[in-house]
Image (cartoon, rainbow, N blue to C red; front, side, top):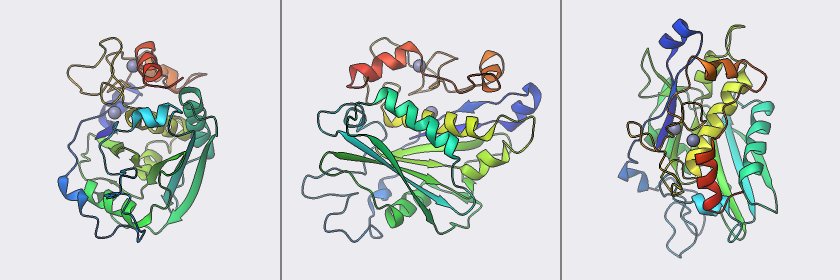
Length: 274
Ligand SMILES: [Zn+2]
Ligand SMILES: [Zn+2]
């Protein structure tokens, strides 16, 4: 899975910020679905051939991008009290998806507040279990469903120098460390909150869409050799870091949210996207 992180120490020096992402391996024990919703078919371990929501990031990239199987996308947004994503950021994400995904029946978002997790930091196992206990929207018929969980705490691997902002941990599932995002956008000199939010949300969805070289095959070689599943273009949304210089300048400029470069766009189009 991928996580997007920020380095506040470096940010202090550069007045910018550093985002990075690291590949982790989904713990096999996440297939323990004892807390799964009491549906007739377990969506995280289907036994009847229906859509499996417990695959790795990027495994369903084509299904999200193309319209041959699924013509509609519903993104379920579940958030803890005080950590609902801003409407501006979700609007940015919706436009980003509409520009890349062939979903003629539309892209919509459903919001639900869930009980606070109450932890300072969360493990991937914590996150996976919360999804299994709370998620209600699943892929069926011509509708593919995505899931975003907005947390009231940080990630267990956070350090003083590095804070994880988001993690894509399953084929349709993303967790956002919204408390950390809020803490980094609280001052007038910080980026606007919706800008940092949208940057993280779109980057994580890029991993759901199989970027880079993880579900959407590369049309041109552009995977960063040092940072698997990230783009080698320092200006691209899918680069492992977005730090000082032109990129951070963009975060404060007229069009502050990083965009996908041509190589990433080509990969999505070749895998069924726009
Ligand atoms: Zn990443
Ligand atoms: Zn790129």
